[in-house]
Length: 328
Image: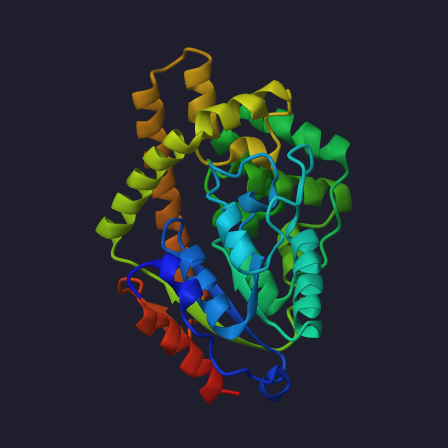
């Protein structure tokens, strides 16, 4: 298949009885711009599947363009779930996503369709496969005080302070990982117990069934070119207007949606602090760095049944389809 637009005109596979597969599902992950959405879309058409989002930023309704959420044409082709379902003023958690995804999977199976989990958020993928430690939510006042302390102290000093109480998490995190540093400190203060101790407890809530795991790992040079090109395409598609609308809401800077890749740079451009060229340059750089961290997580934490480092083609869909049949 040389164009995704042609896939909808191809005859579908013979009807498959999902009951004979048991509770199987597909999970597709990889770094940003690796081609996950295109692969999932083609596979969903091939096997009558439902695509379920596992990207933390694509949960939020405010940023369709800048988070590369599937467009309306894709959504018309196959069912998509958990895209743009949370308002930017809210704060999604791994636990809330896990519950929503499990419900979406159950609904897909009830309709006789194959669940296809797609996304690059490592914490989500890990929770789906392995379950999640039952860590209590942190009250907003404690969370806010931790955010304020981090802003006052800086990342290195805050991380050193965390090490006094939770050395395991402090060692795992780097000084720029403000979200996880604040989370670890907040859990400790709210519960009197280090977050690492909660994480060591038995995990629950993992997805029911057997996963066919697929990882997209394009060569780094190709991936970085895709990232750069995609951001340029986002600008043409209206990313600046999208960020301007987000800014007009006056949301707290600490909310996850305000930390989406490209938001900070485009806000700086809109306020006159930097040129659009400079904003684009920095956003592309940060996205490449994020992709590198995703690939590191993938290598260390995801045992893929199928590893894809070739150009998207119909043969990839056949390869995944054959694995589903062979392991049914």
